[in-house]
Length: 83
Image (tube, rainbow, N blue to C red):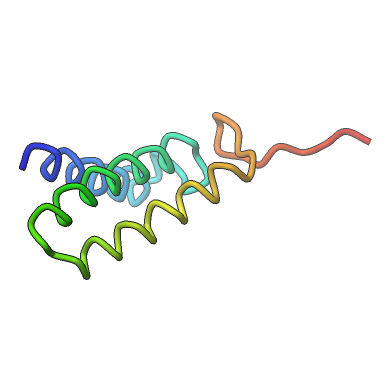
């Protein structure tokens, strides 16, 4: 249950920070909050057999990992290559 609560707080916290324009969706911190929140909720929902919620959180984590791996910087802007 503790992991479920922490995961919920991370996801809602990330959403709140994004909604208040404190953190953009491209910010590595936002994606990290979503990834860890989703991972914690995967453990919680799988334990309780809530497999539709587990599937949603697996997809949530995959999306976060994908965008985090795209090379976004600490400021939330995408890295560019110099010419």
